[in-house]
Image (cartoon, rainbow, N blue to C red; front, side):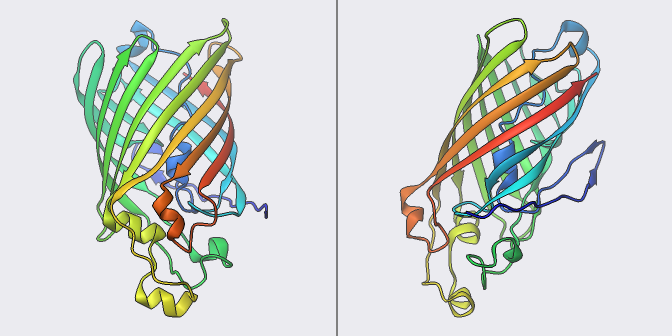
Length: 274
């Protein structure tokens, strides 16, 4: 396996500075990295709070790749009144206008990552680039004791980008006054446009790449597990280590682009809340 560094160029997106990753599928991998380790206080729920930080991740170059790279990971968030308005890396800019004691429903405009052929000239040669796209997102969360159940439906606003959905269950448990254990399980779905852009090989791409043709159907893209720890350095500072592994749908192993069906990743981040 080859190690390489893929650096980012900052991109200002509305109120919050969202840093898009240049390699394929990066946003989905970064999503489980927590931006706030502890729950909001009543004072925070009635006003603004912000989180800024950064770190690094080690992950496949694209979904299904057997090549790995090191990427920078932004941790950036702004929130007003427990989600009445928010801007963060995971969901973009949006609002939860429907909120109750244990649930919230909202929408946002976010960012969907693309894929560059140059990211892996060995496996992606002749496949062309996948352009990134703005996305329209529907969001739902429900809290029950230490568990959070969430759902996200994302539709690309660029033609042909496709639509995805995620269902996730996350748990956080304090091991001590300064250490929080985090675990999550998630399932990801993609429509035909999304699946074919990432795993399909068209007649034109057969000629350019030398791969056999492959048609991907809509369905479950992957299921994943993540496990991590957050260490509270102070009331404002924390350090988070998170490991994640996604298992691609077995049918996708028929795609010539999929070299590995289990996709591991590790992230280390630090952030400051104010």
